[in-house]
Length: 215
Image (cartoon, rainbow, N blue to C red):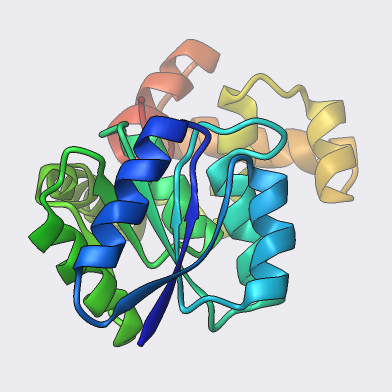
């Protein structure tokens, strides 16, 4: 049997999920929590196979709880079950250690499919959320292509990013543990190599070249 733990702060949804889990062959309820901190504590006690984790919960949100559980129990699978079809939530959930992301509007068949996938060590992303992941991947590919063709060195690219983020030469020197004179030298080289004359032009260059990605 696959032991399922539920974490959600909405009682009505929680009761519905408990009933649904009881109807799916091969699944059994291991426990439940109504906030993120309780989910972390109870997961350590019940040691479920899969945690169905909501995102918006008190004390700790689902992403924070997932991160803590993943750090303590890397073999415990967290599957985010959320109402939010949001690029940032999907990305942050996966970075926190979640093995999948599905929406609360999913069918019982999709829920079971997602659970079976994560149990077998695979990832599962809801069909509606896949375009968000694909767009991020394509953006990363474009950024990698632009950076690989750049005339700037690695250090110059690093300083360029800090410049367009608003840091001055003294702040950059402190962050990178180099002298202000060295930063100023790199800055002059960046301007020469890019053909830019000021920070505004550098910012436009950084956007075109993929060093910074607009949200």
